[in-house]
Each structure stands twice: as structure tokens, then as C-alpha cells.
Length: 561
View 1 (tube, one colour):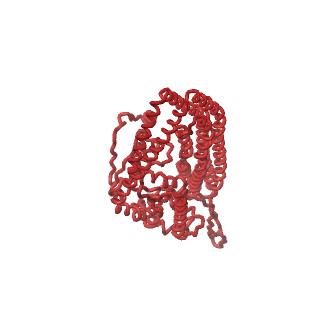
View 2 (tube, rainbow, N blue to C red):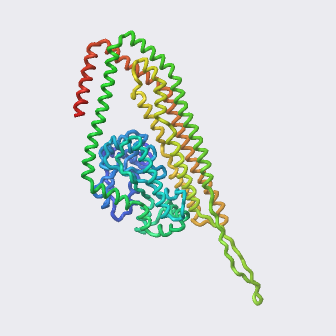
View 3 (tube, rainbow, N blue to C red):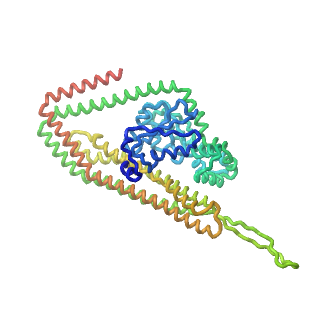
């Protein structure tokens, strides 16, 4: 990746490996200009992006004084090293802000993070922040025509959702170390407020937001978006400052102390669990050596290989079914997204009627009325149609993908298919075999991000390049045609990405189908060789296992004191 960028950009990166680089900002420089200067380091096509480990940003902001804010990858990131990095930060941090988009507020992945990851990491303070409230209020299905009223109503809906999730988690016996009253924010509204304060122009996406809010909330949208104050209030950032940042600052010592206590307890519990697993494994090995001889071992090996031969077809069927189910789901998704596109092609066309009094003649005049009709449409609405289609397609894909592969059910099926071989060996199928499979399947549930929003941005630009905001008469048909072309461009992009995902799943399942049983056979052969070697030195092997079990039991007693 780095070499490709070297060739493309004519930049040598080799001398930069292992180095740090400081990029200073000018206090008079606006944020957008400064962020643009970072594109070579963090942009998708940046010359140095492939070799950048992480970025530290220092800003002169009193609200962040005494704080280090770490923006981590998700824990379900398909790149394992990123998830591991996030887990490491969770263990070090004093408080966690869990950001959950209101378009999928507190889904199963968020719930898993709350009840398992945070608890395992010893996090003593956590808060939930619902993001994208500008979308949430527009999706509220009982609109009153008032932005302010519907904003508060949609907040109540999402707060109720949080209460229901927490109630279910508690009912299931989970310990929850996170504040149960979420805050809600909109980065769009916050940015608009800042730009209004500085008299800076809004970008297309921000203009589109205001356009649609004026359409949906005619009662008070003009008042809300008139200056910076309304956007500031409804951005929710002041509430986050008051109800999250300020309390963390005030309770810093107590939070750190609680973090230490919780971390010690969770670490002790983890070590006790690992030690107990080691004792169980050692006792199983000890019993095998006590009760085995070379003839019985050979008989078990033959039975094991026979079981594996019989299970090879069953395992292949399981992986084929996963691939076929994924293909059916993706094909259905493509049909649904195509239908969704048809719902976003309508343009509101209005007609302006202008009547003038006309006259003919010089001395004796004849008077008559002349009426002109002007049909009007909006390029902003066409742009909004594309945005809405891309956003809804993205949410549709997210919803389907979360249920695409039931990892636990598949692992259970595979284990049942090969358990006969392990039973023949007098062992249980262990995580050393199903663990890698679990990793592969979990990776498939975290799809590559289909950046339909970015593609929609390109489509919107194509519209604005051809039309001004106000489109009239004969140009309306051209606008409809261009909008249709761009919607199909976005659709084709999404379908292509989904086809790529389908191919990825099919290839991975074919690979697992062809290699999984081979891996099982190798693992069992290795286990057989270990036992054969231990049988040749039975008495010493028994003594070593007894000493090992005694030592581990002693460690457990020490930890429990």
C-alpha cells in the first residue's frame, strides 16, 4: 500500500518510518483549512496514510482542559489489531463515552459492549450519547410541523428505548456500569452554529439539512435556523458539557479510585478462570495417561479418523449453506434497494402564474390580459432525494447485516459435526479449533463500509454542476433526467459493493469448507503424538502433571486470599 502511494504520488515514505511529525496550525486558520492540511496523513488517498499509526490533535479549548479524548475503532472492527488497540484503551481510560447513532440506537453490538467489554475492562464510569439527532427528528413519524416539539418528542422515544434496553439487560442478570440517562447530539447543528457565529458559508450537506427542516417543520424552522443560538441549543453539546464533562472533571479522583478497585477485581477473576481451565485440562491429560495404553490409543485414533471422514461432508454442507444464505440475503437486499430508489425520484413542481394587462392601438386602445406560467423545481430537492436514498439504503444494509450470520449457531453446528471424532479421542472439541472459525465468521458480520454517502456526495455535485438551485420550465425535464442518472449511479455503486461482499463470503466459506477438517486432523494428530510420548514415560508424566496441578491450585489459593 505504501509502495503504491510512493509510485502514484512520487513521495518516498521509507525515511519517515518510526518518526513523528508535527503539523502546526495558525490560530487565524479555520478548522477546515487545518484539517485539509492533514489529508496526506489521514485521507483515504493520503501519501502517508498507510504508515500512520495514530494522530494526536492538541487544541486550545477550555472545555477540554485536563482531558485526553481518544477516538477508538469499534470493537467489531474486521482488522483484529484495531479491536485489540481499543480493548487496551478501555483498560487504561477513566470514563467511556459510547456513541450510538439514533438510526440504530443501542443495537445488539452496543448492548454487548455495555455488559461485557466495559465490565471486563474494569470501566467504572460510562455514558451514552445518541448521535445524528438531526436525522432522528426528521425520521420522527408523528410530525407536528414544529422542529422544537418534534425534537423533544423524538428524544423521549430514544430515551424510552434506552430504558427498555437497560431493563432487559438487568432482567438477564447483567451488571451495568454506565449512566442510564443518555444525551443526544447533532454534529451538523453544532457545525452550523459555529459557522453562523463566524459568518462562514455552509456546505451543500448543511444547506440540504436546513432545506428539508424548513419543508418538514414550517412552524418554527426559520426561527431555529435563523442564527447560531437555536442550532447551538438543539446540537446538544451544551447538555453534554453540563451533564457529562463537568461531572467527570469534578469526580476525577473518585473515578480513578473506583477504576483501580474494579480493575483489580476483574483481573483477579480473569486469572482465576484461566487457572481453573488449566487445572481441568491437566486433569483430563492425567486421566488419559493413567487409563491408556498403546493399543487403545491406536483404536481411538482409527475411530477418530473414521468420524472425521464421515463429518467432512456435513461440515461442507454447513459452509455451503452459509454462503447460499448470504447470497439470498444480498440478492433480496439489492431488490429492496432498487425499490427504495423508486421512492426517491419525485420532484415537487410548482407553477407561478403572472398576469399582466396589455393594450393595443394608439388612440383607441384595446386592453386584454396576458398570463404567463412558469414551472419551477428545486435542484436542492433532487440533491435531497439522492441523500435520502443513500442514507436509507445504508440503514437497510446495516439492519440486514446484523442478522446475516449467526456466529454462535454456526459454531454449535460445526462442533456437533466433529464432536464424534473428539469423543473417539476422549476429548472435547476445544477453542483452539473453533476459535479461528469464530474469528472468520465474526469478521463476516462486520462488513466493509459501503460509503454510499460519499458516492451520494459525488452525485449531488454532478447536479449542482449542471443546475442552479431554482430550475424552471424546459430545464425541469433535464433535472429529472440527471437526477435519475445519478440515482442509478449510486444504486450501481451499492450493488457492486454488495456483489463484492457476496464474493468475499463465498470465497471464505469455500476456503473453510476445504481446510477445516484438515486442520482438525492435524490438531488431533498432534494431540496423539503428545499422548504417545507421555505413555512412553508414564510414571514421570503422571508425576509432572500432579506437580503442575498442585502448583496451579496453590496459585488459585493465593489469588483468593
